Image 1: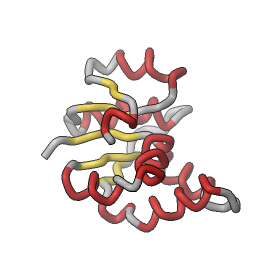
Image 2: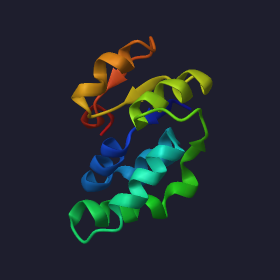
Image 3: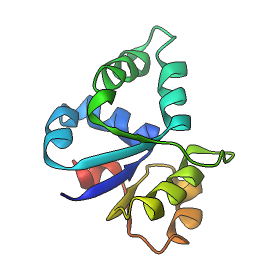
Length: 115
């Protein structure tokens, strides 16, 4: 099965699109504890992003959650887990992180490509 190390924004985008559940059934999604924590923080508010984060958290038992050495951002942690789990792709919608993610020598795609 194809493995995707995926960031918070991309998970939210998949939820908004209605394709998160289908994605979980057809590919392996891998996240870090930091990304999980970001979803929990987002879920505390009362807006659309919060609702989407809460829905993602309901499905997190079907997503591979890995620990890694803490880094300043979830995207930087994705590099570690992508290499550790031999992921096929890193999925991120964070334009500022793309240059760092590309250093992992793993293809980086935007969430919309996964959809």
